[in-house]
Length: 390
Image 1 (tube, one colour):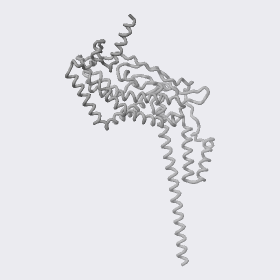
Image 2 (cartoon, one colour; image 1 turned 90 degrees about the vertical axis):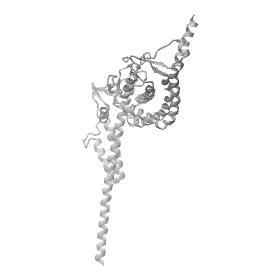
Image 3 (tube, one colour; image 1 turned 60 degrees about the horizontal axis):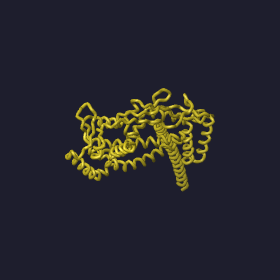
Image 4 (tube, helix red, strand yellow; image 1 turned 180 degrees about the horizontal axis):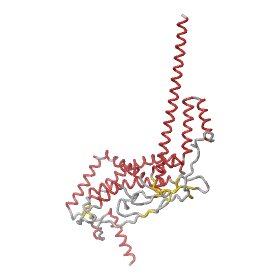
């Protein structure tokens, strides 16, 4: 009887010991899993923050294709002020920073989608129906670039650390709002660009750009075809309504992704967004390690208990005061710093050339008004001024 009791006691102790070991192993696994998860999230967040910071400097440089009347939508090159932007600004007196520049050169003026659309518009046999869809695409892309340019330049006025920490959230929220507005805008563009149905390319020279002439009632067949196209596309609007959100998604994604691939120069070297993200981890090492240390201590208390938590704080203090000399809390100072420059956005001027459409006088515009009657109103105003001066 006594032997059976002793055996039971031993088995209970073994079971208790096994449960304790299993519990410690589980807690340790949870501790390291939590730390790795938080480190991954911190790396991702600061990487995106670096991308947003790069975008803010791009917004200040004002080289995004925001104007439909300029290159790369047309052949008219804009005149963009070449400026320097501040990067990794110090808190010293006076404030110092690295200088990042986005030159509006051959590489930074390229845009694959817009280049394809522009080249087609310049084809001698360019078709009015294709230009209708191109006009919708270009207006939507231009609007998205202009919206991105605005918010990025606006955020550029904020302190860098605010941009890095909160910029991804602000940009995500703003992009969502613009994406929703895009749906309404593409519906408007569907109808607003139907004027293309009343145009025809009268160019007969295969070495010349298209020449667009309005279709009039003097061309009854073409005129009635245009009217039937308007009716058809009004009906098609309700047929393709469910698929229309695809276009805003494509244009928004393209505008964001293409903005990331602009190239800049810093310290007389070409840089990309990846270069800036790498430099960000060097220059904001102390802040990043502070976040990681906070989550290590938090995980130690929640998963391992009070004593390991206090021990992690003790080790952190030793590292901060360089008693454990690993240098993770030693501030990194960039080279080639200079006094900060203005955050004012670069000026952009687009000297719009005359349209390739054939121009007519007042009498023609009275019978066949173009451009929604704008040219007619302009002609009447000019005539009124001439009469009042006599």
